[in-house]
Length: 342
Ligand SMILES: Nc1nc2c(ncn2[C@@H]2O[C@H](COP(=O)(O)OP(=O)(O)O)[C@@H](O)[C@H]2O)c(=O)[nH]1
Ligand SMILES: [Mg+2]
Image 1 (spheres, rainbow, N blue to C red):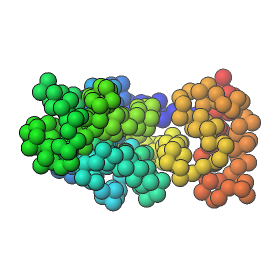
Image 2 (image 1 turned 180 degrees about the horizontal axis):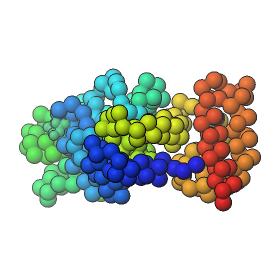
Image 3 (image 1 turned 60 degrees about the vertical axis):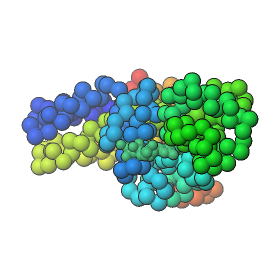
């Protein structure tokens, strides 16, 4: 089985030569397939897009406001995330610190809400759901000496942290504006523990969780995700051209997007094969997509294929689990084919 990125490269080159209306876009995508992954930040005005872009500055991928091959879809409430291209979307519960009046555990609590939605209603619509408070993470990187002094003083003045008004009366507006009530409370706690404030805020704000999710769901699969985005981008430009049938066939038959969906379902706990989950994750490419990486736990591809094929008819599995087993079996079949060729 030739992989999707390789097939896509060939189709894009053909598009530049044979299909003039799509040539320019195909050419742009050929260049983009070799560059860093672009991650788009989308959502309603005021949801916190610019702040998330700032919080991700310096990450090992390119962050842009607006749509891209893959996207972070910012929402205030989970029910705003109604339709998305699941494989290329991470839903972000933005400004999560504002929940519960900026309590110290606000983002952690929002994180549990996010995980529940990933298991339940949002699971089919995205790769992951993450709760993030970007403002305190950004603010933590811009603290001045005065801010640091104010935080140190607040360690001994718990009453000043009881409300925004009290905090403003004590330290002025600059610090609460920079970090938010949640951020100030967390930062004071970090100072009390003798921990570094900027990196502590990145962790407690969920920004580290977001970076990890982008790493797992996007960066590790950048080749497939970009290839798919490129084919989707040229599809409308090929209407009526013979190449369009080839592109549609590749998009419809590519196995990798099914692997990504199943990995997300396993991560969120929507699907489980019990003690076989770990083997499934390897075979699906969670720990590397080379044949050797996929087979690291199973050993030989052929017996693995037989075992997973048998599970597609196992009476111990639900219908959904049988279908999921068929996805793993198909990954195994491709590995068997690779072994035959070598
Ligand atoms: N408390 C809090 N406020 C935030 C957060 N992110 C953004 N904001 C504030 O929300 C407002 C809109 O943010 P912005 O990033 O400009 O939103 P955009 O319109 O989507 O780009 C600004 O006043 C931000 O300071 C956050 O994580 N927590
Ligand atoms: Mg903005």
